[in-house]
Amino acid sequence: MENELFGNINAGILDERLDAFRRNVEKNLPLIKKHGGLQSVVPLLAGRHIFIAGAGPSLEKDIPLLKKISAMPSAALISADMALKVLLKHGIRPDFVISCETTPALFFAGVDAFDMRLLAFSCASPANIRSWNGNLSFYNWMMRGEPYDSLWEKAGTGLGFVATASIVSTQAVSIALGCSPASVVLIGNDMGFTDSYYARGCEPLYKDLSRCDRLAPFVSVQSLKARRSRHYEIRRNGRVFYTSAQFLAAKMWFEKLFKEHNCPVYDCSLPGCSETSVIKGSLNNILAALF
Image 1 (cartoon, helix red, strand yellow):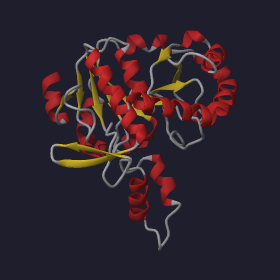
Image 2 (cartoon, one colour):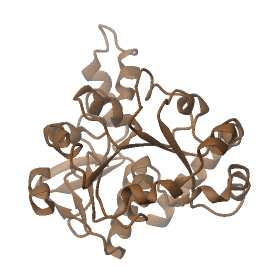
Image 3 (tube, helix red, strand yellow):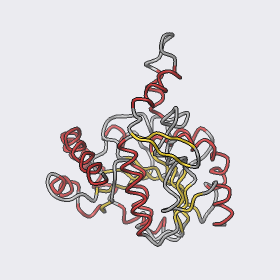
């Protein structure tokens, strides 16, 4: 099942995005040459407790504590692109934002990023990257063979290679683990859902609002979207969550990776990763254990 999931997703990436990858990396070359890769990021994360904020609904419950975390010198906060505006709305400024989105989106529109660094996939949307006005570092995916090798040659093999599995948070975790952190903590990386895919205030929800009218209110649009993505069930502590093939592939990839890695990994996402691969708990209890 695992091999089938990853194979289908990798094939889907090539079928849907290869042309965009080629166009995007060509347009990104001036910024890639100006800003470079991940080499400067490693010392910024080494030895720190790295918190990775995804855009799942459970992110909302941890907003108050994330404000404290963002002010801790021994902690570093990496936000997924979709989660950025949720954090900023609550006065939380992450140290890093990560994006691999290959199509134009409004993740960074109106954002003053003077004190943040964007970690950007070399084939990400040029429109998104150019709307970012803070520090910037690029990376390639750790995927080999053609057509990937040609893309990385174009972007520059010195940027750094990052392992990935279907969602941007897997890339954030790969970067974090490669920087010898004190620990990694997952927040809002739910990879499962009940009625809604995303935390309130995430950019995709604004697109859904444009589809609403009196016959299709926002709650109905969200519920329909969630129902259409109910490919599998996850049962956790008496609760039933649903997940898509994309989320399930990421979940399985995470759990395998964490079992093989010595760095302590904590998870307060719902449902998130299994207790067999991470240390589960509330963010409050995790902070008490770490600090």
